Image 1: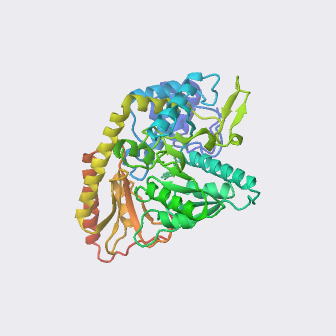
Image 2: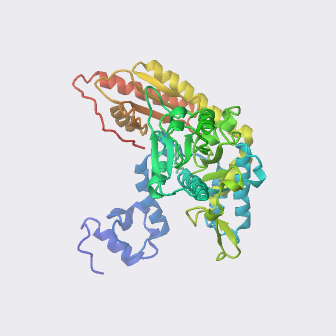
Image 3: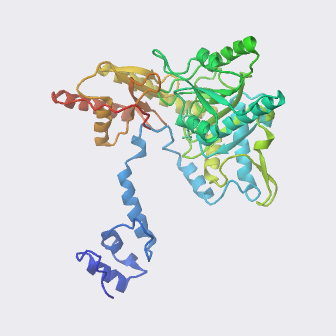
Length: 473
Ligand SMILES: Cc1ncc(COP(=O)(O)O)c(C=O)c1O
């Protein structure tokens, strides 16, 4: 066999050996002496020939070591730990496409049970009749919630003989990017309510004042991606009640409970934010955040059937029977839905409470320790979502961006970003405490923060790195 001239001469003998002796049974040669692992990794073109499965596994597995550990990622809200039994169930259902509801009726049944359980947790008037579905995450769920608001508004305006070309959606500037996407993708004006003074969440009075007859709805967030604070949904509802008394405008609320709709029912059961408020017409959540499932699964539930316009439901008959579908995406793995149902029945209300309470204890204790270091001022301390955030009291010779950068030396990923309009001058750092982040790990993080502050103190010539406005996450 002629050696490939492009190949490094140092590994040519190994290639020749593998090709001659073990072309397809290369498994005999020791793993890290196999030519596939000695030469360059296929990058831009599909290789002409394949490799044994174990070799491909090691090649990819080893490359992924560079990603770092997801457990050290304190930036993400997404689950990074699940029980072995959940792994097993997920592996048993990887091969099923949840959209094939006729072929996999039990998966469809589990999806509907999850919808009903969430509707019940969120106090829907008739949970057993609730309408909702799973999605790939909260972003898709928010798109569906927003579309239902748009359709409902448009129908009302048409009935009144009014123009339907200028819909707007009112939201705080602290909403997650999925709402900005919703507005751009579906041609809805994004009507921002900026943060003022020391606000970290949207002011309900100013949100109501931003509404007019073209407003399809107001988005309330439980809790804010930036700091973990809950917005005051009762105050939104009251402000909109007063608006209705003054003007006759009846504006619905969608609650973006990406994280909080899976936390508040267990940790703050007396907090009123959900379908107990008649103005709340739809709620979304991420099963893959505090629903404790790996990415990606989200949920959207409407208060009543009439809150979802029938035009948004499609009936398809090419899967075996006639099936209603209303999600944007079609094919999706069944495993996340199965895992969601597993968590709901395995943990129950007391189990979710225990997991979230453990996270909250860690968050509150970590916030106390971070505050006691000296230069940090807390913005949130984990009492809403188990999320804490802080800013610098004064500008030393380092910035929070520099601290994030140095914390990576042991694998910690702690994000630093600017608050949204009108508070972009405030730079914050945030930790999302999730299932599996223990007091022990939190203690290690504090020790590492202290170590880096000691190092900064030995660098008098250092200048802080300050990055321009923009939300990095
Ligand atoms: C408040 C809020 N809404 C929506 C989203 C988007 O969620 P997903 O990542 O599940 O699409 C996030 C994600 O962090 C969020 O925090």
